[in-house]
Length: 237
Image (cartoon, rainbow, N blue to C red):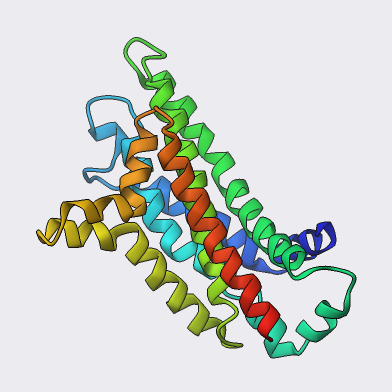
């Protein structure tokens, strides 16, 4: 698995993909949080918190993570290297986890520089340090769980076709529905219980700073479910 992980990370940073994803994530967040004169601008909010950042990031992930994962298996199918990969002394699970962890590490690397936002808000507080630490830590954990689920979806959809664009569109659509679709259905009055099936509901719960095992189990289950589907699809090839 480590060989696959190393291969994935090398492929991300041997091309502009890895740098581009990190740059886009940081630039877009930076523009909304500090530059654009809108409701998301922290300096216009009147109080120092990172609510805007944790609202924007899940929506950015909807596009950036599928862009990262779309080539995971589609490139292997397109180049014909999937057969070579499967002849290596690796199980299908090791191949799947290697590609999954490689993509997730890139997302984590994109999140690390955003800690400067935490420091900035910490200093902007009145008095200095007036920051809800529990909520901030919970929100970062929520983003990691969300990224994990999105990544597993993207890895799965990359097995659908050797066309990266097809994999990207399907992954973005599934992630959007899982994140907001159930909440939209609940808002339409179909059934309030549908809200609990959506990622946004569980992300908001974790963001409050209280780690509920039901939220953790939800994200772990979604992640493992799509990785399991990926393993089945790979075994059928």
